[in-house]
Image 1: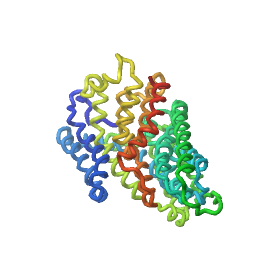
Image 2: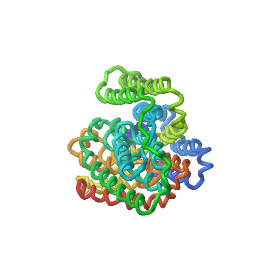
Image 3: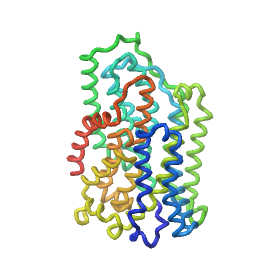
Image 4: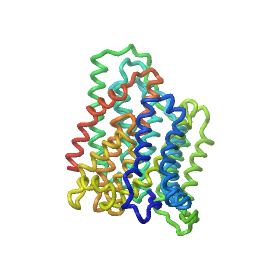
Amino acid sequence: MSHALFPAHAGGLSLLWAIPFIGVLLTIALAPLLAPTFWHRHYGKCVALWALAFLLPEMALNGVKAGLAALIEAALDEYLPFILLLGALFAVAGGLRLTGAPRGGPGVNTAMLALGTLMASVIGTTGAAMVMVRPMIRANRHRRQTAHIFVFFILLIANVGGALSPLGDPPLFLGYLAGVPFFWPLLHLWAPTLVVAVGLLALFYGIDHYIHSRRGEAPPVIAEIEKLGIEGGINLLLLAAVVATVLLRGVWHPAAAIDILGVAWGLGEIVTDALLLAIAALSLLLTKGAVRRANEFTWQPMVEVAILFAAIFVTIIPVMAMIAAGPSGPAAPLIARLFDGDVPVNSVFFWATGLLSAVLDNAPTYLVFFGFAGGDPQLLAGPMASTLAAISAGAVFCGALTYVGNAPNLMVKALAESHGIRMPGFFGYIGWAALCLGPWLVLVDRIFFA
């Protein structure tokens, strides 16, 4: 993340410069709950005010040219590839539709959750959630009590399942952009992910079996098991193209570049950004409109994410500058708690990243603790791999602890409620998540990070 606005005096930055960043995150977390109608209409203006609260004073101090250069650097190096990947995955997943649905019982529901969990690291948590949520609703439309199914859906498909690749969850993609190898999450997070996923699936089966067999269900309305199928199959090829493009970005670094106000935009970045845009366009052109209509596809969620993350990427600039200042900067007290002398305390990194990811957004939280750990991708992916694993696991797993920890959480909740399913309220969901996910987080901490 760029901190070019502060090349010489990062250590002298006041913590006051972090207020816009904190304000953006708290606004995103609380405004949809406290003033949902106002937020839906004016969310862009709300976060733009926080971005301006940083930009205007900084440009007044350092000059407009320096401010524009820092914005361009952040946009080209981090924001643009981040949003283009999310947009490409969103478009491709929106063109895939699973048809039919088996009759939802404990075994079928557990299998569908397991399938969605595996899909999440390939097409992203948002993509997997949008592909799987409607078949899950259809499979269980004959049952009276289904809220618990979608609580576990959020835990597994919208969060835990995305831990194994940069495509899976936004924090890991930001790590990839920072220099973490593409297959690093798979090699270092498979074991913690297996513990949490298998534990949650076993717990779900037990709960769903109890509710299904002991509490009674409405008479089935599905006479026979409906055969599963897939529409929009061309998007499977386009999904492979997305994966190939992301891999290309990591290995192809030609020297040619375009200079924009002193910021180099490399040919490799230009080509891969253009490819992601082209893949999204091809998905829109080649997928039948009926498939997207059946999926209730709309760009609104993606537009909202793009606007919110634009404000986040702007306001995090001074925060990353403070972190880059290290022990001599204003973040020194927090950094001291994360280290025992010069040795990182991985358990503290895991819980600190996780708990903040639960109440804020997990992508910027990952970036902050990535910086606290030194910000050197070669060091973190190598000798400090256990520390990066703690940060990554905390960000991905704990984004499931609240509705606001990860973008797909609220999307699944809203879609389930639109089909008449009574989902837990904000604090009710936290209770469910803490009881169901909490023990597995403690176990992961004790096995891998303590």
